[in-house]
Image (cartoon, rainbow, N blue to C red):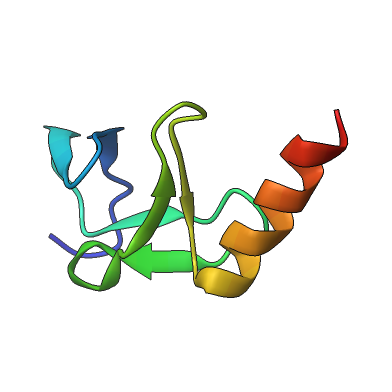
Length: 65
Protein backbone atom coordinates (compact mmCIF):
# COMPACT_ATOMS: atom_id res chain seq x y z
CA UNK A 1 0.00 0.00 0.00
CA UNK A 2 1.40 3.31 -1.00
CA UNK A 3 0.30 6.63 0.42
CA UNK A 4 -3.02 5.43 1.86
CA UNK A 5 -4.38 6.87 5.10
CA UNK A 6 -5.08 4.18 7.70
CA UNK A 7 -7.91 4.28 10.22
CA UNK A 8 -6.90 3.10 13.67
CA UNK A 9 -8.51 2.56 17.05
CA UNK A 10 -6.00 3.68 19.66
CA UNK A 11 -5.80 1.46 22.73
CA UNK A 12 -3.80 1.78 25.96
CA UNK A 13 -0.69 -0.09 24.80
CA UNK A 14 -1.26 -0.60 21.09
CA UNK A 15 -3.72 0.12 18.31
CA UNK A 16 -6.16 -1.80 16.18
CA UNK A 17 -6.19 -1.31 12.42
CA UNK A 18 -9.76 -0.55 11.33
CA UNK A 19 -8.91 0.30 7.72
CA UNK A 20 -5.61 -0.70 6.11
CA UNK A 21 -3.16 2.00 5.09
CA UNK A 22 0.49 2.94 5.45
CA UNK A 23 0.21 6.10 7.55
CA UNK A 24 -1.86 8.30 9.85
CA UNK A 25 -1.72 12.09 10.25
CA UNK A 26 -0.54 13.94 13.34
CA UNK A 27 -3.39 15.82 15.03
CA UNK A 28 -1.10 18.77 15.84
CA UNK A 29 1.42 19.16 12.99
CA UNK A 30 -0.49 17.37 10.19
CA UNK A 31 2.71 15.44 9.35
CA UNK A 32 2.32 11.94 7.94
CA UNK A 33 3.33 9.21 10.40
CA UNK A 34 4.21 5.83 8.89
CA UNK A 35 2.36 3.11 10.81
CA UNK A 36 5.64 1.36 11.63
CA UNK A 37 6.91 4.58 13.31
CA UNK A 38 3.76 5.39 15.29
CA UNK A 39 4.66 5.69 18.98
CA UNK A 40 2.54 8.52 20.39
CA UNK A 41 -1.24 8.75 20.61
CA UNK A 42 -4.06 9.69 22.94
CA UNK A 43 -6.64 6.98 23.66
CA UNK A 44 -9.31 9.37 24.96
CA UNK A 45 -8.96 11.79 22.04
CA UNK A 46 -8.29 9.00 19.50
CA UNK A 47 -5.48 11.07 17.96
CA UNK A 48 -1.97 10.30 16.78
CA UNK A 49 1.08 12.52 17.34
CA UNK A 50 4.26 12.71 15.29
CA UNK A 51 6.58 12.85 18.32
CA UNK A 52 6.73 13.58 22.03
CA UNK A 53 6.80 17.29 21.13
CA UNK A 54 3.34 17.23 19.55
CA UNK A 55 2.04 14.92 22.30
CA UNK A 56 3.28 17.43 24.91
CA UNK A 57 1.62 20.32 23.07
CA UNK A 58 -1.69 18.45 23.09
CA UNK A 59 -1.32 17.55 26.78
CA UNK A 60 -0.71 21.20 27.60
CA UNK A 61 -3.76 22.26 25.57
CA UNK A 62 -5.95 19.71 27.36
CA UNK A 63 -4.68 20.80 30.77
CA UNK A 64 -5.67 24.43 30.09
CA UNK A 65 -9.36 23.53 30.15
